[in-house]
Length: 144
Image (cartoon, rainbow, N blue to C red; front, top):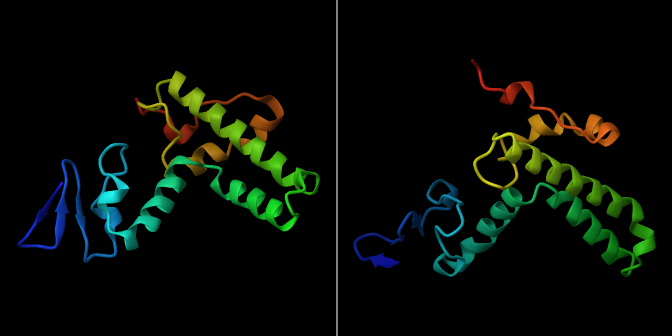
């Protein structure tokens, strides 16, 4: 990383962070290893972290609901069983999607589908709960 004196930018190997610009998501690719949080100004780190969490964890909302429930219930797990079960179902579903998509070569990496494809996969949630089977969504089938 080096600081360019003529402009107020940090230049790193694969991304550029504009310190003066609030919309830093256009400047940074969220691939692991492209930048380090300590290189980002502190006032921008929270937004970067939150965006990265949304990308990596499809069950982030459910996780936050469970945390809020446990906090309000004084860590009494028995009062939050419905929320915990919903979170577990979410994790099982997205793990099944990740495994299915990776096995069928729909994704190059072993991560969860990108944010743009998640609503397409989520349409199968009800049938997956009943049958525990997934199919390739019509929107994602390669056109021949």
